Picture 1 (cartoon, rainbow, N blue to C red):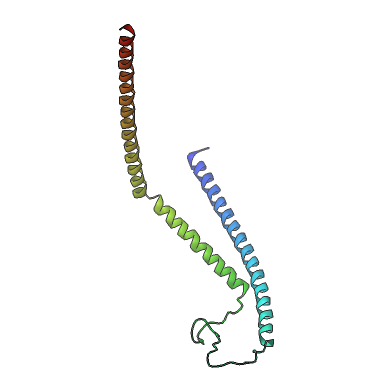
Picture 2: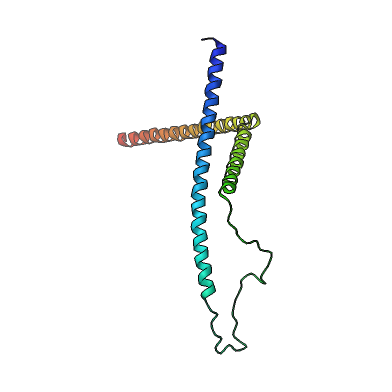
Length: 171
């Protein structure tokens, strides 16, 4: 097999791999869209039930509502008419939104990885690792020297103590 044939085979394998990944991403997006459609449908049913109940509820009759009685009806101030009302969206639109979100996430991951693996970052990391290795080596050598000093001091103290004891035994 020649080099050109090897490159051609490698390129073909890469293209096939990318196509498989694209198919897997599309299938996963379709499954997520179907699952989300089911959730939207169930939530729409629940909202409809809640809305039915809210129309059946009558406001309580005011009994002994004197001037010192306050009823809180809202939490965030006056009612706003410019609040958009939720509406059902088409399954294709939802799949499009999910696919776009997936593409944006993939693009941001790709950008982050490119930035993290850039030559400048790799060199900076290599430099900092080298400095840290040198620092730990110096610290380890200093600890070794200190331990040797303490060991030799103990040995000297022990040998000096032996001489004193030997001198006492003789006298």
